[in-house]
Length: 256
Length: 256
Image 1: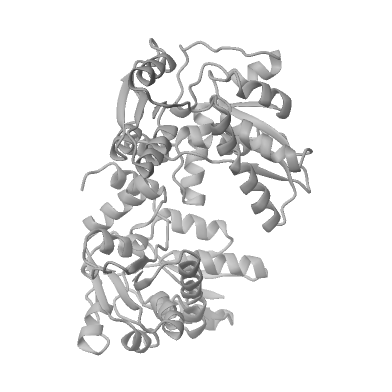
Image 2 (image 1 turned 180 degrees about the vertical axis):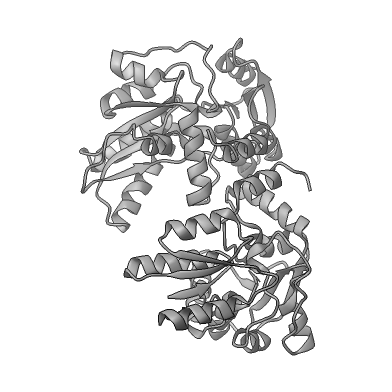
């Protein structure tokens, strides 16, 4: 298999390929966190680096797949990937029932939109009244802008963010129509709000979360999410914990 | 209620008192991690500081309890505390059955020995063949020494360790006879082995663990625990994640 990924999908594909005993090649940004590069290689995958600002990872991956006769496993714009990630929606339904929670809204981190498209599909099938919001880092709010504009918008590659997993320039061809139909909107958080959420998770939840995995929690803590109301519960999806120790150390011991 | 604690029991007692709407006073070492002092106060408890090397926390707490007519809640040497912590043993039995694991040994962090005495009581009642080991930091191996000597031994207060939760000088009056009857022995880990376990938990398990909570994992990773054998599983109890961000940052970004 050949895949492209900023690092989390990379590890999932590498782990699945290892289980199946087949070779995996993953196209990853040269500036991906070391922990993501190391963990992907440790799972036996070959890593091909590219320049995130100058090259197309899809193009590199397609050429590799053609040359090697391998199957492409995209990181979000694929019906099977969307369906697989949608199982998180089924888990939310199960766990909310167990906790006797009355869920009125769900906040999900959003890069290309595959995770939230899958979750929204699963949720809306059984609970059409629950509102879902895509949460993105400032500068990479392509899904938020696209939902407002009613068509796929692209953000420039010039902005920076500590949320390395969410630096997608535009919503997917498959994911956007799903999200346009099912989401209530997008929310945008700053890097400082993300840092505060990571510190909260460290001090109160005892969980390591990477920046891109913390955006939904950040939106809730920063008061950006719509109020859930007195008898409503908000679900926050936390996904991804592959953060380099140096950056994590800096964030948890800083005040901003 | 009045309790004494290095900080984890403190938070448990403070939270329980808050739920019941009764005042709580906790005697804590002046050199306890700030996060433990802050979290205990945030739960509404009054914190009374003492000098760990020169004063007796039990004596201070007993005097406070007498003066105020309050109930004492010791951190380990109490039948109810031992029984309550023993519910972790019941959870291990349940979860091992669900995971179809064949548990042959269980490693548990040990300060005064209440946690492992409770777990051992619960485990041995249904699975007498499982071996339990108390894991302690070097310099505070009072339970390990006592198990070898066959009587309660006391270690000097001069040794230091990053495992602030486990700096107990001697096994409890109630806990030691239980542990003497039920444990297979004690294991001792160095601070550097604890640091390595904390880094492992950060990078691979995505869990924040405090030094004292990581000793059992450290014993397993350092190869100090007896080999579980080909068809046996080892259970490690990880308990406690109240570590100051500055110390945690230093540990995860260091190599030693």
